Image (cartoon, rainbow over all chains, first blue to last red):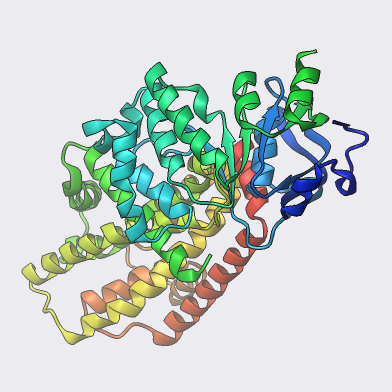
Length: 247
Length: 258
């Protein structure tokens, strides 16, 4: 297990067999802050992440834990290339595509479930034909039935979760960044979703998973990182990081 | 992202938005025609009945001006808010930010095609001959489109940086409504020097006058002016696309934290 101080990119502490697989994503002293508006004419610097460094190898599943507002979602956005770090560097394997999956947020509420699913596929690089082809699979997995052709704004939280997860399952990217995908929806769908995601994660897929469920992290992740108040508290083997987090 | 892929996304986003918009309203697609006609109706009532315009051809004159102006103003206002309005998507995936204003402009363009068709039918019914000269509409529409794209890209960036700009852009449209010769004729201004300056300084006044020259009089518009305006607009669009490409993640941060 590494502490934040020891965690330098050259000394990532990976097990020998992991060192053989290429690095997919590497964060070097990544900090992120922005100017947030408090009230009229008043601005303050909001520091979200402070000098975070770690490496992610191909095929690994990394769990990200930490309290609310710790900077987990921002970390995912930085890894996905949506935001640029204020300082530090994020290195990706050449040509690696990273995509962030969140529930509900990415939907255009006025569009139907079908259009949103299609849009999601297109935005992630599918051709028109591929996007059309995956729609039936999404409709079936989501169990939305006729609601699939109604605007997403009429959906309940659970229905959005179903659509979001089913769409996410179709994504084919090199690094899958998942933000709390499995924590919503009703019981039966949650089990089905967890099973499908576990199958996906156990394959060759490189995954970063943000979750509040420590059980889930322990079950599916082989590495974990604990973010606290924007700083990296702990990075390494899942069991050891979870032990530190719970202790 | 290749240009072809980018264009497919623009087109798909525009079509989806049109479908969603049509399903939101009781009259659906009929609003494409109805809304611009109502605009014309309001102006016609004020200027023909209340202010007693002396032009015999005032309705055709007004329609040529108003229907093309609404294309510009609605597109720019809507596109300006498009990046901020899409922050859900922007917070999820790294996309070229120009995608959103361009999709919004494209949506307006598809609508406008039906409006132009309506305008031409109206003119023919009212005794304006359909002639080969109407083909000059194509370059005029192209330059008009480039002007809309240029203004929309700039507007979308400004609103993304400081949301207050959305109010100023709406105000600017009201200013343009009065200064672009929609219900008055640029060529009828008492001072010819002033008329010259109006069309030079306000490209929209030139474009609206060009539509009238082509559609009502069957004349060739001022081609040099049109060419220069097209060139400047295209250059401006290229510059804005470059700026947006360079500042993509910064715009994302502004949109997400807005």
